[in-house]
Image (tube, rainbow, N blue to C red; front, side, top):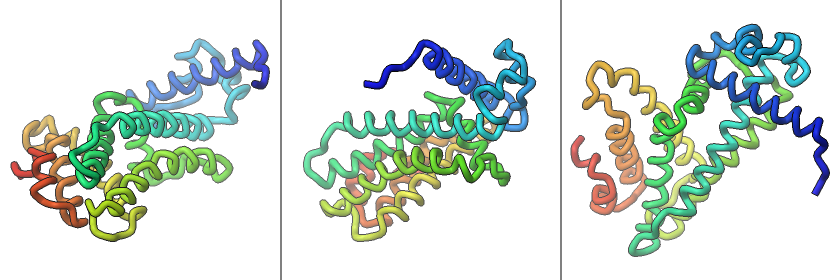
Length: 228
């Protein structure tokens, strides 16, 4: 195992702290609220000191995104590994798809700062990641995304879903649930009607049934579906 010097360990610890505080600022103030001056003040550093670790705000944002996606991928892997099997292969596959749906819907309450960062980056038309940083972000995204693709492939293989394009289905599945989570702001108007968990469950049910899943089995797994 490569030896890590005390200086390098200290440097990595400082970088982690910078990213942690930057994530807190984005969560509270949005992407435009993250400035090197504000970040340095929160860290009790000079703005110039930040350049020893990152070339600027854009690299801090890309490093945050990369780390958040890495952590999400690890958590999804743990979630899928601990999913209780069903009575047969088809039911087990659907349970894994439901585990994925619940996982995405839970992020906003269990990891709100991370969820806000992803929502902010997706909702902003500006590009915050430079081309040279795309490979790291892309690698972590696909590590997360391909876990869902594999579950889609397994569901099709055991007949839980009809034949289709797993990558396209996974993208529709993930992006739709991501959109549902933005309804949380409207919950202040009507918390029952705009409950994103209920809507997310209904959306998941509709997608799975549309892709050929047995409707009665899906409804049994999702009480929310029959309510809408």
